[in-house]
Image (cartoon, rainbow, N blue to C red; front, side, top):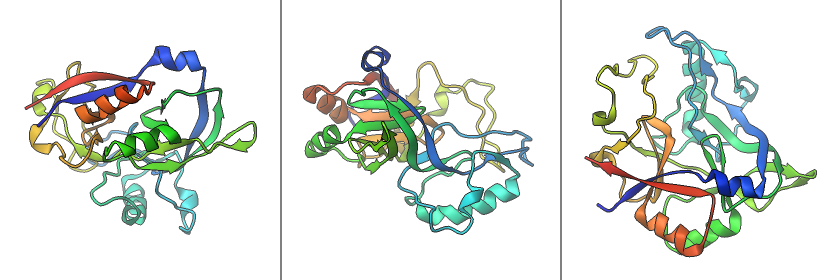
Length: 239
């Protein structure tokens, strides 16, 4: 099956460049307020779909970063679901459209905006030439000194695998049957569910912990061979 790695932010490298983003995605699926099933109010911090364009949607103004009832959230979710890649999760707070705002300073090959991965366009093309899959870059709406930033793109990272229940604390409750919320902190040692691992992607998110991004050994080897920076790699096991 091969080896898999959780990627993270190489803070020392990124601080050396001095770059940062003053930005947000153009649209949001609203956060959930008072789920009728579990009573929780929450939003996801991982899912982003930069390819989704709501500009032709009559109700696009309703897709803002604010809490809504479960009924309204469900209605808005169905309006945008056809625009997403098939099978993509749409949790409360999912971010939609291009990253919009300012890019300040210089950036390494890979940069992070919360759980979104931004990559230099030329470096992305180099990786794609290595035959890696799952690397779809989408233009941002970032500006620098009032000029469009054209050398940075955001990767749309699909959700295709999950954490194995063995790395959940014993007292972890089942996901809410209404809103799907799983009250789970990031495990110290993530374990992947082997049966859920994709065979056609070298980069993907976890469906039950979307802020965790996983890559194959092929991805790691290509990044290192090309001398790209901005990422750390921690091997994860599966069962």
